[in-house]
Every structure is written in C-alpha cells, then in structure tokens.
Length: 231
Figure (cartoon, rainbow, N blue to C red):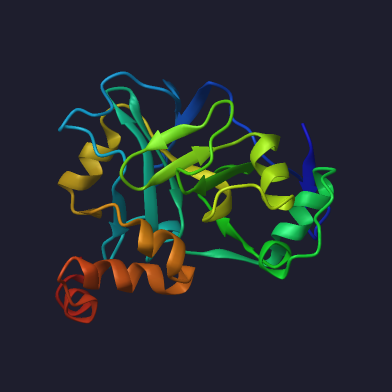
C-alpha cells in the first residue's frame, strides 16, 4: 500500500482500512480500543445515525473537536465511525498524497491543490475518500443519503486520471466511538445530530461547514454559542 510523507518526514498511509477496524474510545483522560465491522447489518435502523452530520456543540468537552463537523459513516450496536470535515491540514495537499502513493498526479489544479482534511485523532496516517455515489470500487461503502466512502488506491488513481467521482474530499484519520459511547456523548450534549446534506459536504469550504450546517438546521450558531458556550 502506498504512503504519503508529511513535512516532518512521518509516513502517512494514503488509503485503506481493514474490513475490521478499531474504533477508539476518546473520552478525556482515557481511551480503549474496541472492534467494529466496516459493513454492518442493521445500519438502516432508525436508532442509528449513519449518513448524518454531527456538529460539535460550543463548549465541547474534547478540544480536538471544537467546531467539528463529522460525517458519520458507520453507526451500529458495536460503535461508530466518522470523518471530521470541519478542518484541513495547512501544509499537505492532495498532490503530496498522490505522489507518495506512487500515482502520477496529473496537471489539474482542482486535484493537485485539493486540501487534506483532519479526519480525526484515530490512525491519523490513514486516508479516506468521501465522495458522490456516481463512482464505486472494491470496498466502497454507501453512506446514504450523504455520500459514499472509499479507502483503496483505486479511488485515488481514478481521481488522478479524471475518471473518479464527480465530487470528493480526502481526509487523514477518523473519529471512533466504542459501544454506546456516542449515545452517551449525545446524552451529555456534546453533539447535535444534523441532516446529511451532501451540498454542504462537497460545495462549502471546510472552515464554513460548521456554521452553514447550523444555519441549514434553522439555528443561529452565534445565539447558540452565547447560550451554551460555558457548558
């Protein structure tokens, strides 16, 4: 599997997760690892939230997720898996990912200069592509109604060669929750569950997604911050 090197010389995995990935419990002060399957039966259960956007509430107890917008890709009885799309790396572009994966990057600026999102604190060297459902490859996971998720070299090569999905973004790392942990955080008002809006995911810059998603929910985030910022 190809890798991409960050400016500090650390090697970053361009893409790929195992079909059984570790979800890391990320409560302040302790963590443990638990397993969940990437393709989960029962994901369409009304009790599960895959395909929605999680918005970090002001006063979020974990500072790593301040103003986070998490595309929730997997949620079942064993845990949850999502990609934060609210921030991106300042010093890594998609060109670097392609070059270090051994894939000719081509010459299209929209590909070469595409940002690399800070997907989450778990496995920050591992890459994921969220994209429109007009492309699919081995292992692509439907995240209805929001997007699709791919994590193979096939999607990187397709994007570089101009035959990939019409809309896409790339992230390193992910956010993982163990069994029942996301539900616990929702109970303690850490997150707001918003509708899965693909237009916000793919057409709004990362720095604006948090505010724009709140607005799409009919909520003024400035008022929300005033009311809950000290929570």
